Length: 381
Image (tube, helix red, strand yellow):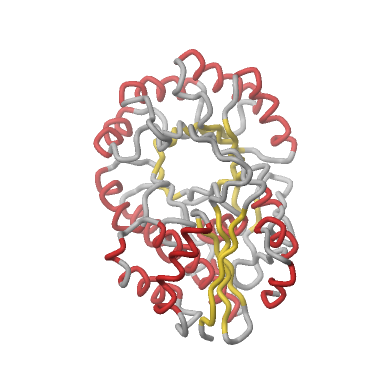
């Protein structure tokens, strides 16, 4: 089975809020679906956390390297793409685009072997994973209204982040967290994401140390992106002092970038994003390195249904990964699959059993979300 063509479909029109200082608008494209077409008539699907324009430019550069390549050797082919594009800069749009290609190649590998990706990754440690609902922070009096409808859907773990947190004063920060804890009750997991990778993050280590103590008082499960994403030494200090786990790593790409952070002891929980860190091939290497350093691997998943499907398989194949991120209220997760994800009675998601990623793309939804004529997608069925 050979790669015949790779196409990109930028998603827009219903782009969710990101909580960024330069806020996303519905028409902004930050997620792009990848389709790898083969000479056997089988399509593999992936997702890239990058705009369509950058993905298409990257594909034009990568095309001579992937055209005619094996469609069922994801690790080798992805490494070939990485190794031959070092001169364009490592970790940017090229790496992000390779991530989507890699996910699609694993999808094809599973389809060719008639096995779900998680079994090809070495086996399944679990058959279901608990998703945590990922929501933006609002004003304290608005938090119950944000959380209670999601709780009613069956979620039993929640992450709140960005918004006014860390951008106003300590009183507001604690009021938001207290309101969230009251809304979800004492028995559900609550995580807090400061969003310090945002433009011109205003806080520092002393703020993070004080805030970690406050979060511990409200039984917060982890504190995410508490510091600027380049502040390695400060992360080490924070992690040693904090009473609750410190998580991060969503802006890093490839195993080489993660290794110094893991070696230094900067994280209790590492959170690579499969749609930009290098794909499934790279993320499982990061997960194994994390395990060797005693760091939990819980993937970052503010992306699409394809990213979530990849995360479910990675979680199934990783010994200590019992949570995945679920971006609630996103059409790119809820509408893109032909069969939407469904929580079970305990608030868990089953690991897909069907070959590949185990997700069938709704071509009608893809046409609508990517502004592509439906007739142009018929050969992807």
